[in-house]
Image (cartoon, rainbow, N blue to C red; front, top):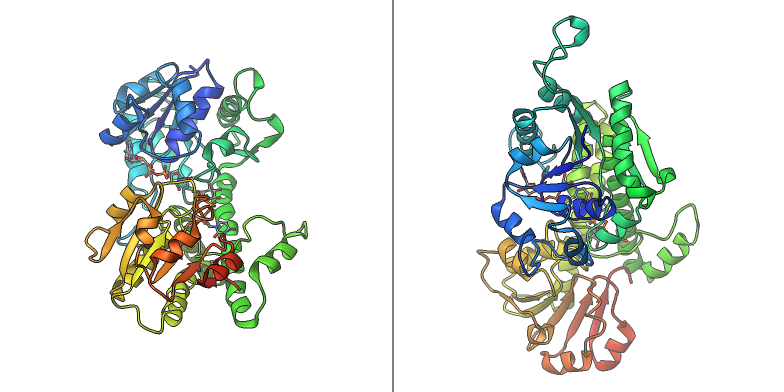
Length: 464
Ligand code: NAD
Ligand code: UGA
């Protein structure tokens, strides 16, 4: 078994994860492949105009690209060269047929498994890096090892042997490099067979890094494959649930005069609750929370656990409601008519420090405002290109790099993403350029509301 690694899928997960694996394992060659030629060209671009924005990523890529990290569309030769194959392809929510709107669409994953089988000329460890429904590894094992037969049946052993492991990724966008360099934990699930245990040991060695300089062994947790697959869905569902819970309390705060930031601060001081993921806002976005919770709902339903399915569905329902509530509150505050008013949307990315707009609350809110014939000027430091693509075909939307230009002559500023640039703006200048009365709706509670009021703004927040 050689130590080289190939990752199929050069997206938000494949690119940064493999760059850090290469950095921490200079004695291994790491290949990252994709069918998307444009994406691979961007990863290879001379000026490091990488296909995704992630703080610190360019520095890591500069350090290792061309030394022991290679981006390529030649999946066949990369698979032949490497005995460890990570699969980080997309697993979106299925939009057709059985399980539509809830189950994972596994077509990209299965296509990849068939490719690996077609190209492999020796034994391989195949590692699920994508987030997948529980028991996907069994299906993969069946496809990959089909035709091999079992030694004990007396017709086997011939052809490459594939051992399928689950190694879900817990990094968050915007902090991917930091999360990868010092993770809370690494999870590796494998079959409880001699081959399975040996394969888990190989993957543990990768995360320990060359000379044990990366993740402490005590933080590399191993489980059976099904626990690993389920833990990933469970962890995302628990995080999403916290966001929905705090947003459900935010509405009650608005109705009663309580302040959600105060409530969260004091709740979070209880170590059993903890302070993280208690920030009220416009609801969660991103490519994974909704998809993974829906996947959990589908799994519960498939196993007849209907009350559990309903419980997790509530997390999504609450999230959708939070975004609708933003538009309702804006409507009321702007005298029950939004038609032809100009609203400057500050931030389109689903969170700060990323250009990613998948499932962004700003996209959902922009569509609702568009239905009300609002003239929308959207600004974002990193997400304008993705945003333009998401809202293509909608009239009445302009895109501005400069937030001051976006706010000029606007009736309201609607802050959707907590970019650190926004609290630092000259809000006096913004106020002067706007139509009066000028409203700021800060859905992230990141601006100084008292200072804005002193300038003459009307201010709306979430949960206060
Ligand atoms: P992505 O869409 O950014 O990247 C997936 C890539 O796979 C694409 O570039 C696509 O072209 C490529 N691909 C698809 N089929 C292929 C094939 N047959 N051969 C080669 N390449 C192929 O998606 P992502 O955000 O990187 O997510 C990938 C997986 O990782 C998902 O299951 C997701 O749930 C999981 N995940 C993502 C994050 C995150 O922060 N984005 C975090 C943890 C887990
Ligand atoms: C999330 C998880 O945090 C990662 O562990 C996981 O690997 C990843 O999903 C995944 O599987 O893709 P990510 O979606 O990148 O990471 O970002 P988060 O920081 O979790 O934020 C998700 C959404 O929740 C954002 O829209 C954010 O603004 C929102 N959020 C988060 C809140 O509204 N309040 C909070 O307190 C925290």
